Length: 360
Image (spheres, one colour):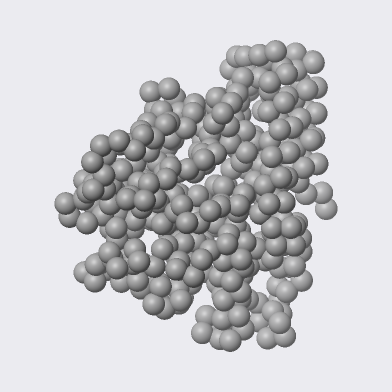
């Protein structure tokens, strides 16, 4: 069977080795005579999977002991609400940096909970770059600063992060977590939907500094309170067991690949292949993001006119490439090159782009 040349933005490609391992254990997980999604979430067999996933996350991301790792459902979109519900106290202001559509949506939900402030924005420039955040003004009443580390729609990415000891930093890392090493001490809460670099959709990873848990009010509904998950090892109710099992396999794969230092190197090399084609095309391909804000996860570009873009996408589909259409909100083209997308597939796309330019 030929694997698709999959450049979907999410749900996205999974490592082939992970899928083969899951297939091998599909009907009989560890001699139980059951598939992993048939196991009780209270069983010792599933508990081992659950705990291993948390342990591998802590290892790969170098998460210190003063953080909790939580597994929550509802995707990053639920976190848009849970973050302010748990952390935005009365009399405080939540700061948001707008760098794309997802940060806009996070701000929209926070506005329903409490007072917010736009700390920086590149919206008026069509989100072509990561805006500069200035730590000016009175931050004494700031509940937190929220950023989106990678913007899938516009193809921009934070390459260095804000640092302010007085204001907790919250990051939506749904589309670039596990793509590079992080200094966890810079962050107070990270959340990430799994369907880009971590595994299939269904589970959201939340990494939170333990002292922040004190801000969560007991008046919150149980399933919207971070403490519910922290106190119960994310087993208060039935978790998405299959998604967590596949997350564990992805983390094992990343560890075997050499950890995040090696994965970052591979991602840099893959991104360079495509950006070189764009930069050397004499304007035939037009990158959306400014060079110093370019994403290593989502390469966004247009062709010199709309008709050419349509023709490019049509021929790319015929050639076996999947998921190259830009987001419906802005159009154009987008190649999502997450961790699991092989370098050979990226090279094939680069060759196709060169050949298409030469023909046209």
